[in-house]
Length: 66
Image 1: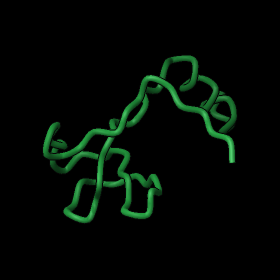
Image 2 (image 1 turned 180 degrees about the horizontal axis):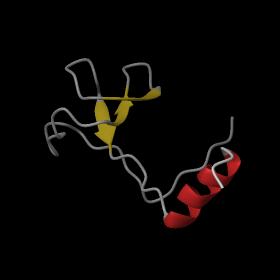
Image 3 (image 1 turned 90 degrees about the horizontal axis):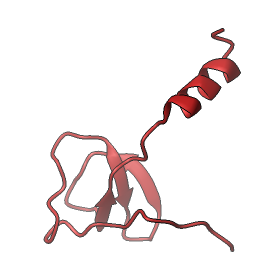
Image 4 (image 1 turned 180 degrees about the vertical axis):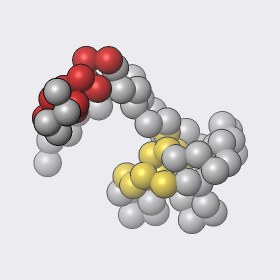
């Protein structure tokens, strides 16, 4: 299976404490990425990617909100 990776990295909670009550990317014990808030079952976390104005505009267009 191919994948794309870049500057984003997984952060370990004992090194970089995850913010509480905030939606983020979570790495499960099975190595699967999910979106949610931090809990003790999570292995690592990462911030969600930023939505640029261009991406927001594309979403608006695709959803018919002209």
